[in-house]
Image (cartoon, rainbow, N blue to C red; front, top):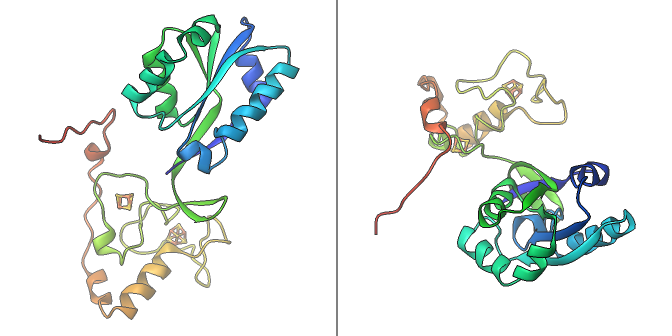
Length: 215
Ligand code: SF4
Ligand code: SF4
C-alpha cells in the first residue's frame, strides 16, 4: 500500500488561502489504512477547517482515489458541492490527488505527503521493503531487498560500517546483508553470493511509467 501522512494543518490552511469554500475528498483504501485520509480524518478535517473559518461545501470518501474513472464518476455525483467550492482538498496519496486534478478544473490542494510503498507490520506500523526499482533482485538475495532494506542500496554485500549485525546508517536496524547472508546460509545456497550482481539498469526506473495489458 502507499503510505502517506497528513500535512500539518497550518500548511493546509496556508494552501487554502484566497478561497473560503472547500470540498474535502478522502480515500477508502491506503489513506484510510494509514489514517491520513479515511472517513475519520475527513470528518476531523471538516471540523478543523470550520474552526479555521472555512465553509465546507461537502465531503466524500472515494473507494480508490487512484482509480481515475471512479474518481471522476464520484465527483460528478457531487457536482453541485464540487462546483460551489473554491478548492478541492484531497487526503489521499499523490496518485489520487492527481486523479482529482484530472477530473476537475477546480483548484486542488494536497493534504498529505506520500512517503513509500509499505508493508504492514501490524496496525499502524508500516515498513518500506520495496522501492519499485523495476528490476527485481530478490532471487539473488534470499527474498530480502538489497535496494531498499540496505540503507545504501548495495547489491554485492555489506559496506564497512556494519557493526555486530546492525546498520551504520541506523543502529536500530539489522544490516540487510547480514539478514541476506543468514537466510541464504540457512537455505544452503550461500554459494550464490560468490557471483557478482550486475549494476541496476536505472532506465527501468524511468518515469512517468505506464503499463498496458494485452487484451
Ligand atoms: S529489488 Fe527490491 S526494489 Fe526492486 S522490485 Fe525487487 S523488492 Fe522492489
Ligand atoms: S550496514 Fe548493512 S544495511 Fe547498512 S548501509 Fe551498510 S550494508 Fe547496507
